[in-house]
Image (tube, rainbow, N blue to C red; front, side, top):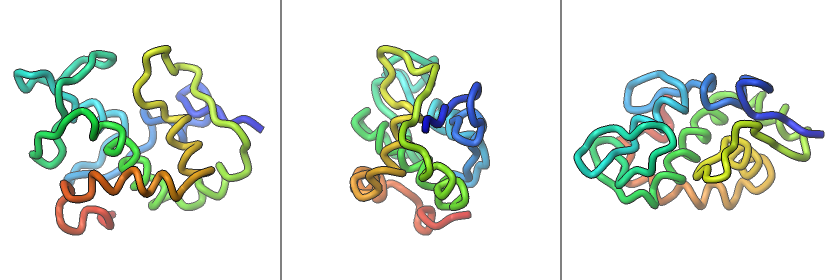
Length: 140
């Protein structure tokens, strides 16, 4: 079975609709993700543009931290919505009809990895943990 992870599929698995609390702000995963991406001059990049660096809790980090941060946002979401993990576990494949050819982070790929290879997923987010506020990993 296939789970479409987008606003045209099951919205609960769309970064536009999945909301989490990060850095004291409750917003969509997409909004948190887009807000962290910056140009060399500090401006937020437009969606689809390549950032020069990211900002996480006032830390300026290389773009190599972008994927771990995106995964971390999904980690928060699934931690708070265990019933969705159970639901998604009944699917074999995860798709995102809006995934572009040059997409860096796909919600379908991240969700698939969380469901099918959680050990790797959790290892991947460890790199971002030192840049979280104390207690943020368990913030609700």
